[in-house]
Image (cartoon, rainbow, N blue to C red; front, side, top):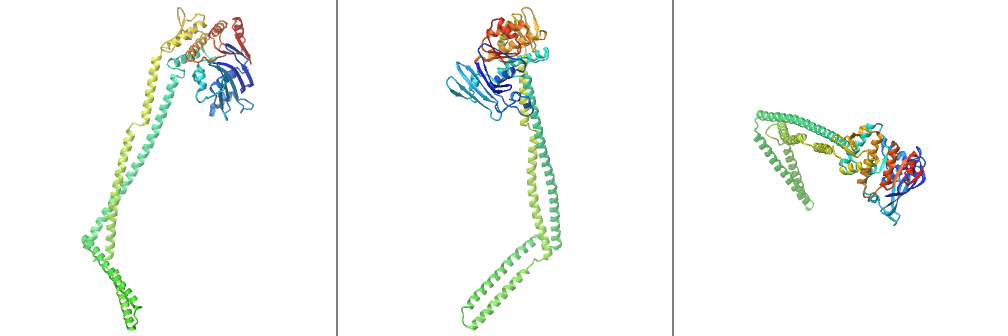
Length: 509
């Protein structure tokens, strides 16, 4: 891949600015605050997009930092690049209210799809993380040599077992521990909820048992009172039942007589209007009145029927008997309800003692952390042979053969080998540490970006280099080939390129 033209419509300090780039070394010169870092970020944002963060993070994110001060809705640009012998144009609008992107193959006019991964394919399949950790290099900002060495150790550790440098063992452990704490919190919340439900069920069981005891006591009282009432009245229970049945049968007979009398009265009444003789009519009237009188007396007699015991005691005994039947039914239903609630309580107890899904998740996370630690221990003391070899090759050229090889021991301590001795990284100068860092980045770049060589962006990378180191670095870059963008606020890179007769294309911001 080779960048051809940057057309910045509105991005940070740039507005309607076009920059032409060439193959080989492109020297982008500008004083401080002239927009070198902005241009570096523009290329990255065009290739991978840029989203605005949320909350407090939005105050310092790249979107806010490079958002145009004037007309922020016009936050866009395009880049033309060559890949696989074809020319492409990538356009983006970064405005959060209407973000969009379009990729066109200028050579044949085909409209490509970013969603389907066409741009990633043109980039050789690398991720944003690979880009940030390989070809896109900024000046190291560590305040001390020890801090810089620690940063370098972490960078190497990430690449011992990872294909794209995204693995950070300590970060991975921290993430898993955080998830483990979340699972433990969910388990506590779950157990607390279950305990509250179990406590509520226990309270309901206690209340039901108290109610059952009261009903049992009331049943016993009603039963004893009924027996006492029957004993004093000397009315056996069977006799009471028989008298009730007899009373019912008598009432049925009486009601039948009433219906018969009324029926005969109705028949006589109908005949009354059919006869002409006065004497017959008078007789029918007398018969009707007699039948009506009989029916009325029979009804009165049925109302006066009673048990062979007094009505007052009979009603009381009936009430007691009804209470007994009702209480027996209530006690039976209560017993069934209590049995169900006790079963549910046993289920709660079993559930609280059983392993939960949160325990399984916690155990899985613990196993994952254990495995990561095992992997980390197995990786300590070794570095990928290809990365170590390539890093050593680059460092050998940058130091003009002074350091022959880079190594790392079991404690993740980095060391440099001369032809005769071993030198720990913390014993060398900051300039040499930066050379090691640069060598490692170049080694990883060669391994991960083989499919599609990408432009190399060096943003003030050589600020801590002395003249000799700068000379060797520029020599190596010229031999490396490909497209290289060197961002600098100093003139010594250009002077060294001229002195070494290395061709370059200069852009002044």
